Image 1 (cartoon, rainbow, N blue to C red):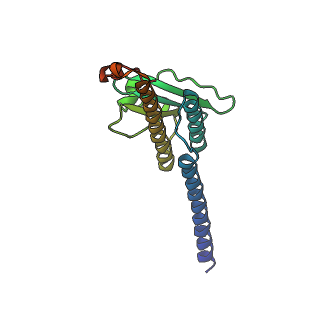
Image 2: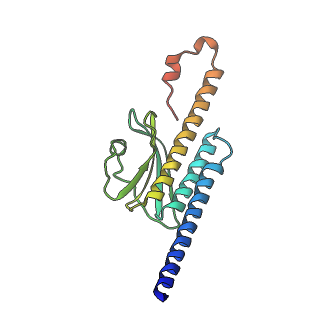
Image 3: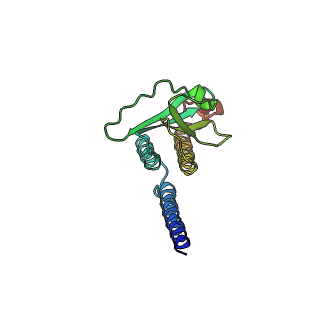
Length: 183
C-alpha cells in the first residue's frame, strides 16, 4: 500500500509538472499571436517586430543566439536579416547558404526552422547553434516564422500600394510594379 501511495504521488507530481509546462506554452502562444496590435507600416516598425520575434524565439529555445532571415525563393537573395543574441554571446553565421536552406539541406553546426507556406515567394527561417529541439519548440518557432512571413508580406504590399497610388494613372502598369525590388 505504501508503494502504491508513492507511485500515485509520483504520477500526480508528474501530472502537475506537465500541466505547468502546458500552461507556460499556452502563455507563450498567446504572447506570440496577441501581443502585436497592428501590422508594420514602416521599415523601423518592421525592424522592431523582427527584434521582438527574435526575443520570443530565444525565450522558447535555449540558445545563445538566433538569426531570422527572410529569403526570396526565386533568386535566393536575403531580403531581411536580424541577429539577436543573449548577453556576451559570440557567434558566426558563415556557411549558412540560402540555397541549402531553401533546398531543406542540413547545415553542419546549425538548427533551422522555416516557415511552411508552400505557395509563398519568400521563406522565413530561424537559425540557431546546433541544438536538438523538442516538438513543442519546433511548433512554436514555426508559428513565429509563419507570423513573420505574413507580416513581411503585408508590409511589402502596403509599400507597393503606396507606390502605385502615388504614380500618375498613365504610368501605372503591371510591368513597372513587377520590376520593383521587394525591400
